[in-house]
Image (cartoon, rainbow, N blue to C red):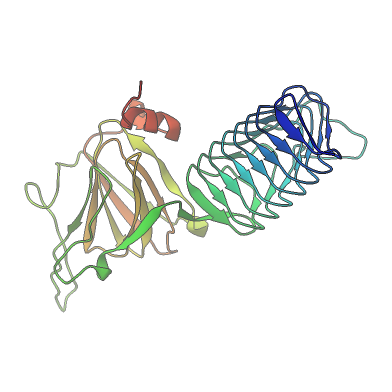
Length: 313
């Protein structure tokens, strides 16, 4: 007969050796929790889950059937782990050979891992990220990124509506819901000798540039950016090929397709920006309002959100 023990539910066939199980947690049939594990409140550990000693599970975490959480695994609050997802903690496993220490794998708050996904040792899955079913994750996953495939690659971002300028009504520009971001249509001057576009300040350029850089020859559609600036503004134009720009003000995020020199995007300070989905021939021009200053960069998404979101008492 099932029973509720010390504020949590334990199926009669479950083995729970830890005394650090949060109130309201449910531990189902044939699940085994070793003595050193810590499991938070209101979690759901489904059938045939194994939890080793050096494991930390936050609050409101769901772990579906057939998952093993080995030493060094940390699941933060509100994480979902799908059935038969596989974690690993030893980069060079050998039978009978125990490493001096196990790699630490961290799944940050609100992230989800799909069924049968494989997570290599020492990986960090960013907050709110989504790992597709069957994906093989070989590198860290940024916050809110959607990854899939083998090896897993970024294919999108959670709750980021894709915006295409060519889908806007003639003469109009697409609406951008992200604060401190605007799309600017650049003039097109056709000529038999070659087409031309331009921008100047004052006029279409939102600031006087003090620096420019080019991003090109990006291999395998990899991700660039993944940071915000404290004071710097940027103006981005994909002068050849195409790429996607993800902008995020901490509350809303949007993906803008840059597919030619006819548009520019002004990204102000305190906007998290990512450039990805580069075509093999893509050339991205970025104009900056100031010279390079490493102190102006915000490279941690949680720090960025703490700066832009209103403080609650």
